[in-house]
Length: 305
Ligand code: UDP
Ligand code: MN
Image (cartoon, rainbow, N blue to C red; front, side, top):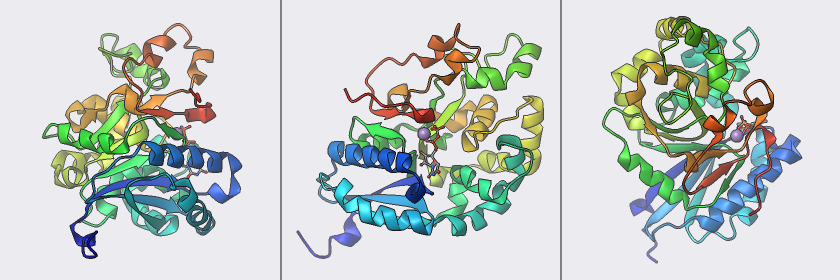
């Protein structure tokens, strides 16, 4: 086709955290499954291109550059690969997210290197303004559907929504909100679906960067005083980074979030079933409808089917 088509291509952006991959065979295997299944099921139009962004250290980037051509051999669509240096992004991110780190990170201090776990939260301030939408994905995923269909979900966002995200499928936030739930026994915070608010899982996220930039409310919620206010109100103390932040502000402002169906992030981890929540586990874990993406979280094997 035409040589000057490049400028007219419509681009679909996906981003993955990709650090210490050169040091972990386990992560390399997950990466292979994710990329091969994405290539296998991906279908795009002639004038479209998938742009794959990886946030990497030097060693992981070298490995990624070596592995990707083979992993994407089956792809029938155009794609482009962009590596972002994790240290450069961390430097921009840290001042924005430093204050929230103490509420949503493991341990007591706000470690500089942990800032990257909050990338999605401030992505709209880090990425260039030309980037209007991006999907952030974990590496421990297996695609069963066309990733292009995931991007179509952006078109269903109501006006106030800034992020599309699926619910958490374990009672982890029932646990986190324990004290708040005791003080507010009628509240739906931490309750299971369909009527409750089980919180979010960050394995698959649709970030409408334009809407995030535009939303006065969302940007106010990033301010340290606002984070502290809500953390106090909900007695929130977590260690899961961005997904804790989104879960907490989602309890207060549901309109900011477009709920992705559970099939777009079918989590498989069952850790909380064996740790005090066996009686209610199934209420959270249950997911009807087609599975588009399996998420083998907490190192759970993904079925070969
Ligand atoms: N990750 C990474 N390097 C690491 C650990 C994690 O790049 O050493 C990225 C990777 O994209 C991974 C994501 O961080 O999918 C979240 O971690 P993980 O999926 O293991 O968490 P879980 O879903 O089990 O909570
Ligand atoms: Mn994961």
